[in-house]
Image 1 (cartoon, rainbow, N blue to C red):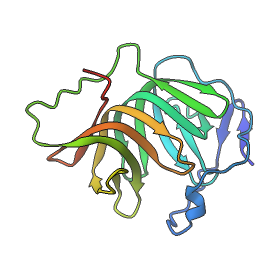
Image 2 (image 1 turned 135 degrees about the horizontal axis):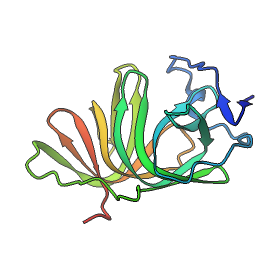
Image 3 (image 1 turned 90 degrees about the horizontal axis):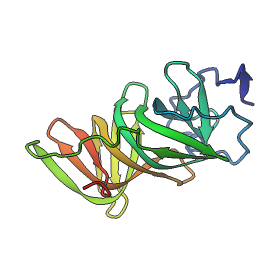
Image 4 (image 1 turned 90 degrees about the vertical axis):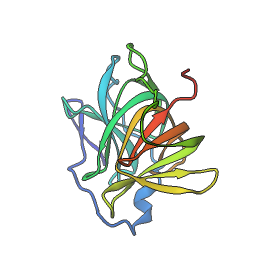
Length: 192
C-alpha cells in the first residue's frame, strides 16, 4: 500500500538489489492511488523505476514529492544520470492524464543537438531502449530493431520518450550520438 502524507508519497526507500527477481521489473496492474496534480511548470525531474511498487516514478528533487505513472510519452531534456543509484534527470513540463504522463520541452525549447566537431559515432535513428545496468553501475542502450547493445556512462540530450512496454524501460525514438567518452547524446529527429 502506498502511503500518502500531506500530498507526498513515501515508499520507505525499500529497494532490492536482486536483479534475479524479474517480477520487480514488470508493471503493477493495480490502479495507482489518487495523487496530487503535477506542477504545471518547467521543472527538473528525477526519473526512476520503483521496484517496490513497480511503477515509474517522477520525483521533484527540491520538495522530494513524487508521482507514479504507468505510461510516459513526449519530449524532454535529458540532463544526465546517476549511475550509482540508477536515476535519470530530465528538464521538462509534465502533465498527468489518468495514469499516463505527457512530457513537453521547457518553454525555452530543446537543447542544442549539433554534434559537429565531437569525436565519436552517430548511431542510426531507431527505437532505443534505455535501461539501468545495476551490476555495472552504468547504462544500457539497446537498438530494438537490430538487438545491438551498447553500455554507456551517461545519457544527455533531447529525449523523444516513448514508454509503454509494461516494464521498467524507457525508450527514445530518434538517433543517438555516442561520444568517445561513452556518453549517449539523444537527438530528436523532429528538430532540424
